[in-house]
Length: 159
Image (tube, rainbow, N blue to C red):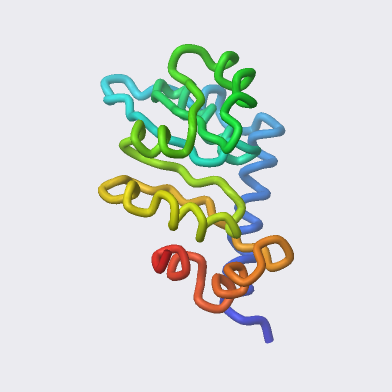
C-alpha cells in the first residue's frame, strides 16, 4: 500500500509537470506569467543562489516590475544575467542581497543551508523568506538525511 506522503509527492509532482508542459506548449493565456500588477508597489527582493532556479524566478520578478538583487559566491559571473534584465536587476553578495531585500529567495543546494545560517542567520530576522530548499541525500549529506526524517520546513527552521 502506498503512503499518503508518497501520494502527495506524486500528486504535486504531476501538477508541476502539467504546469510545465502548459508553459512549454503555450496553453496558458499569453501574458499569464510575469506581468506587472497595475497599482501594486514593487518589492525589493534579494535572491540567494542565482543558478537555474534563482535566476528563473528572479527574472520573472524583474519582468513583473520588482527590483531584484541576484547574489552568488561569485557575483561577477552574474553580469550577463543582470545586464540582460535591465535596470531593475543587479548583482551582489549574499550579504548585499540580505540587506537589499524586503523579501529573500533562497535557491541553493540544501547542503549549503547550515553555512548560510551560520554566516547570515541574524540578517534573516524580519524578512519574508521564500525557501526553494529540496534536500537530496546523495548531494546534501547529513542535513539532507535530517530533512528527509523531520521534513525540510522543520529542519530549515532549526537552522
